[in-house]
Length: 437
Ligand SMILES: [Zn+2]
Image (cartoon, rainbow, N blue to C red; front, top):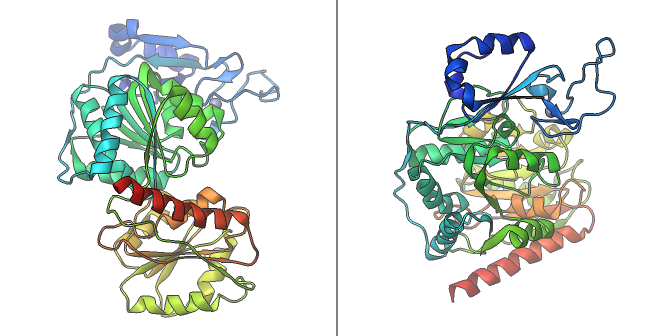
């Protein structure tokens, strides 16, 4: 049997073959908990009950005519002759987490934190639109703490692994007690009150969370993915509340989440009160052949100036290209989505063992290094959207000790999105100052 500790799986969905189901029904656990266990068809109305994707007509084994789900096969194939087991959550977790954060919120952060609590008390969904480096995670602590104290089950989720790891790092530091982290290939489930995971991992749960906090709600793969939105919906308790967070919400999102379902909190100011670093745009010839002179000049400073840099490139193939052109005196590594060394490299960078990183857009969000400068090569290329540019620029100047820095875009051609991002930062800085008055 694949599953041994059934009591760890409260609030989860499990898919069993017929013989596994028979074995399960013979366990003491099943006999005791029978009333709280539902057995269902894994595909209902041709929709997979794990990933909520539509089952296509040609997804079947020709010999047996048994259907399967191709969408979520990486988590183990579900077939139409399997059984969906739902273990209703009795909310019996014992390990209570508690806040031990010693920091404090600024007045504008506190205002947003109060709005979170109000939305929670009124059981309303909520969207927080706060600029990069506004301290979104810290603003959540009062809400998380209140829900923990009320014995509620909480999921803190994000579309990307790096963001999940960063969230987990902060929660671990600022809350005592155990929590569960799930991402990528980390599948082992423990019954915890607080779960930090990727949205894909949320597929394992069924109507269990009283509070779901979705960070970076506008990021790929969540944006415009109705199946993943359904996954979030189905993981929450019937009267559970969803809190969305974003530094770059699209107009559609503001309308959908904000106006239709609840209120929007807006914070145009970074937690340390300094403005967002401005974006400088420089036109350059083919940087794939020769790095821009300005960039070369800047890079030579990093041996002495005790700062670090991130260079964003549009394609994976650009990583080695740019790496080969950098000054040899610099210790630099590359990072991309399917890189096996990714977490190790990021950790090395965090420890200050590298001068810089060259990355694809994978590092645009959720990661904080300091003191950092940001260089974007090929800013006009399609992969860099307006939101991506704002996010990449947002990696700079996040810490109170080093609130400023360089953000340069090098581009071959004119593209409106670069100017739009540049103007947006000027606009947000102006709003931030006004809010203060
Ligand atoms: Zn599926």
